[in-house]
Each structure stands twice: as structure tokens, then as C-alpha cells.
Amino acid sequence: MGFNPLYAASEPKRSEIQGLAGPTLLEFGTPWCGHCRAVQPLLAAVLAEHESVRHLKIEDGKGRRLGRGFRVTLWPTLVLLSDGQEVARLVRPGDAAVIRRALAQLEPI
Image (cartoon, rainbow, N blue to C red; front, side):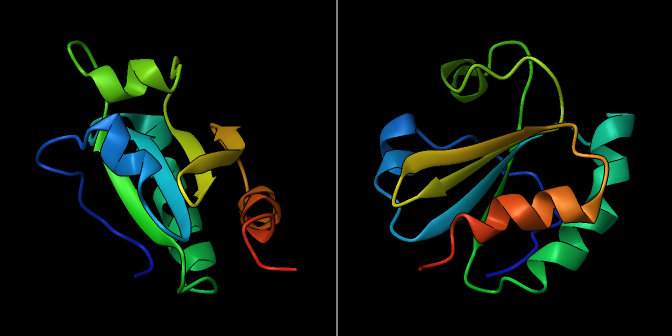
């Protein structure tokens, strides 16, 4: 698993997301968003330390239901899931330490 540089060609259904086992990071954004592009190196670095985390990039925007279902209003929004349940959320994270702390919540105790 680890960092995924590409947005999904089609968004998964909410039921598919809820059925995912293990740790997952959903990244909502767009390829043209400056904030989304700025966070990519941070995500790549932090996810390299968390190889067990599944990274799904979901292109968001008009007509996209999954983002609305997760109440996404700003990009990028990172939703961290454990076995399909939301554990943490970050909106426009500005540094790797913030992402690292959020991902630590997905680690088994």
C-alpha cells in the first residue's frame, strides 16, 4: 500500500468504504487544487512510514456523492478510517507532523 499519486477514475460507493478492513486514508481533492498539490510531498513522506495504511485519492467536486457524504467542504480533506469507521479528519494540513499524529491514531495499541 502506501502513497497513491493518482486520483481514482471513479469514486467508490460509501458501502465499499465502510467495508474496508484495516487502516485507510481517504484524500478528497482535485488534481488542479493548489492546496492539494502542496500536501502531496507531505503525504508521500508520512505514508512511507506507514506502509500498512491504504491511501485512496478521491476526486471531489460537483456531482460527486462520496465527498458530500463525508461532509467535505474544503480541499484537501483527509479522512482516516479504521475498519471503515472514521477515526480522525484533517482539513488542509500544513505540515507532516500533523498528518503523522493523525495516522498514529490508526496504529494498534
